[in-house]
Image: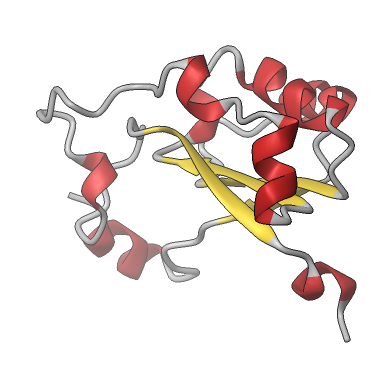
Length: 128
């Protein structure tokens, strides 16, 4: 059994903003004013809450989490709670080695990239 798959995961949407405008996704609608970052009190769950839910792994998602300037602080919060795994899902547009090092330093253990296509033509068609 893959240990990652056996962990109890909790997805925490830290933002409803996105820097892409994919036709199939609700977060890329830049005209929608309700697409904002979630306030810290809404995304920084307590150790007690995570323990009661049996959470071992937090997946930081959204929208596009890398749009948050305070993402490292959110990751640090979950790292201090000694979770087995803290992962983010990103479209990769803002991804850089510098930001990766910063996030890993804060306690991030993994990155998942959401790919729309490997063919440039299909990618262009999936974006508005």
